[in-house]
Image 1: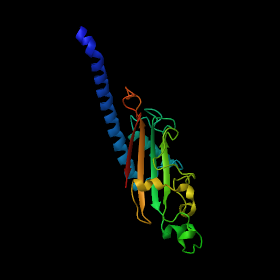
Image 2: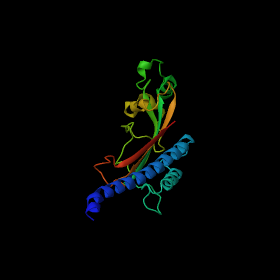
Image 3: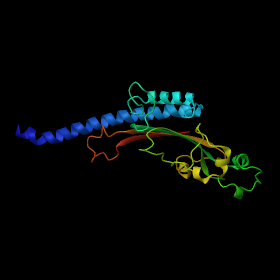
Image 4: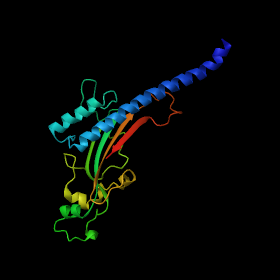
Length: 210
């Protein structure tokens, strides 16, 4: 009895840590699968914005795919919860070249010095689904909101410095004029974080880029 009493605390800690790591690993697998599936939708051009009825329905589909992660309002209402336990961020980025300058600046003179975003990594699309107050994209948030469909017009792409995302270059290097897609997913993990002092990151994060 005495020996068991001495080792019991260590056994409890070991058991709790094992359970916590196992549950967190399972959640990370779910987050990774969701990220990969949403990236496919973005690449295919599926409307995921909140600016149309179809986009809202597609957001509900994403929340249904995220079952168990707390993205939906409830187990039966798959409307994304803006104060929930998960966030999905969709981004499309271009490294601005001369064609983008010509499209965005009326009567552009061809001088790259007169195109503010030339050779810069710039958002062309951004949609966030879920709790935007708790997390943010690792490439940053734009100072200027996109149109209701999630896209930016040609003018801002060429000229608005508020939609630059230079951090994207550390994830994927683009040639001039080329575009890249990024999907990021956050999910709260505090319910599985039994020993917060041991595991200091209370969320799961995954990203896929193309």
